[in-house]
Image 1: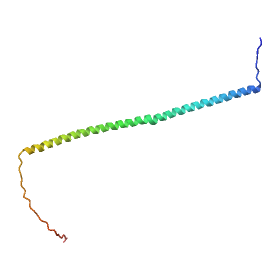
Image 2: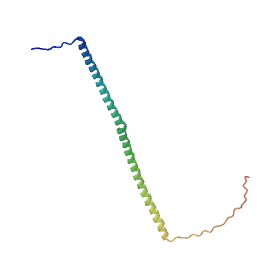
Image 3: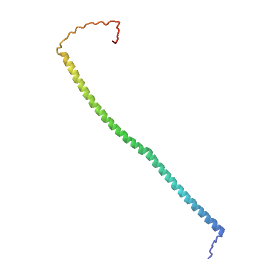
Image 4: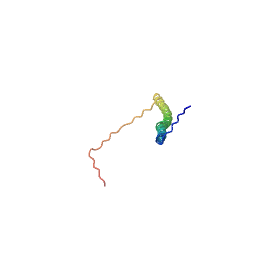
Length: 124
């Protein structure tokens, strides 16, 4: 049985170890680059969420609250409007009912007063 054994020389062994060390260093650098890029993407997505989604939901909350206040105010306005219309209707019926009743006519004699054209005002 013949066996073949390769015994590397020191320069070949050192070159191979250097390649392995460079690959390990490069692999660690690429892993760190991947981690930092994923962290950046995560922080960017978090910023987008906070900036647009959370902020818009906050705006919608306050908009809903103000719309509820507006609907309450408009409801109160409608109540006052119906009360004013009821009062106008009562006043109109009072005015129309007095027309049908007999009225006393009062005659007023007007007196004509003439004012002189030239007047002198002075303090004494």
